[in-house]
Length: 166
Image (tube, rainbow, N blue to C red; front, side):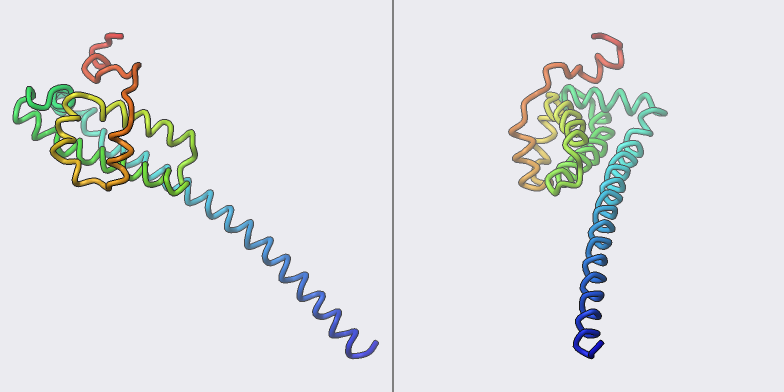
């Protein structure tokens, strides 16, 4: 075997090694992407739980929130004080979910749940009033998305849900 043959065999082995490395790298990137998507979904879920958890232990907070969501101007000032932080936080969470779906991080089915949840709140009369006073604190694309949505016909107001009315 001459030197040229040995060189050609070495180049072939190196090329096969590079191709194998590329396949391995592609598999690792796919796995990392799935992992990152899981982290985002988990983070959104935990953020929602952290936000809504206090309402489970504080019926007054839930009542204040429900009153403000249904009628911002008719709710007491104390109810609005309690609701304003929750509304801002929940809509920032909705905005985050919207960004994640726009970047392709959330799967279509995952986004559908967030979209329905977002619209269920956005289209409540009190939230519309609050939104008109705070909309500038959100990204323009999110505002455009939200303001172009339609209400959900089956969305039962929070007060009716709590009272058990269909």
